[in-house]
Length: 301
Image (cartoon, rainbow, N blue to C red; front, top):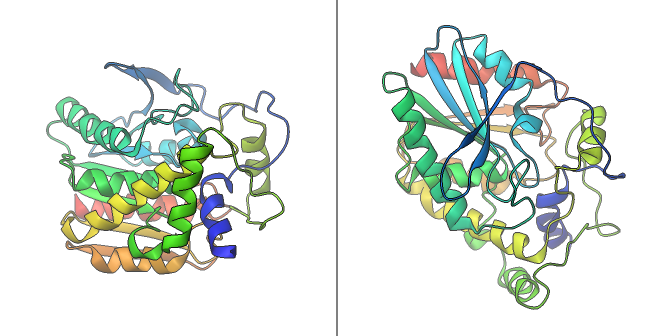
């Protein structure tokens, strides 16, 4: 039962409680906000390096959005010659369709298409796809679905799929999505999970009206489908890959992350942080993680 509760809270553990009132500013006021054009425009944030030598396309986790996740990490990378793009995934953040689940296939297809757009804008620079939590699952699946990238960075990736999810749990998720697709689950009273040691950040997220604090049954089933796709993709991904994981992560269990890392077919590096939690880019020791990402990209480039 506890395992199933943790699986539910994989979606909502990062969001602290509290009323949804305007959150404090996210940081850099020079942040540029644009839109990715298409059938439905997606909100895009960009941090440009003065003399870029590489590009990151970054994907946030479930319920979050681009500047919420990367507002501090991205300027650090930009100062180290890495231009960063981060968009609000469909159904999230600043997009008109916030809280409307688009489906796993759509999220993966969006990423593959947007990496091609980034490549068009920067044809002479290496492009790295970075994903956190759900974004890591999407990134891994997209890497096997034609994403035009030079490397992959997975932070606490959502890869608890395939055989790791027992049939009764999978059946319960499927039944919930069928019978009560729009019911949102808080997990309150089932199990307590802490996503970071950065308590002010957890409180900010809890107050942010753009953050989805509790998943619906439909979103829960959708996350399972993303994780299934990510697990199936791992043995076929040959891109150089950096995996980041905190030993204090109470959201993403270590065994599926270790298994996905072992399954990767290309050159791979694992960075494990004894003091790291789930929100590695926002934990109190986040600068160590930011530096590892920048150094790894420099080594690859």
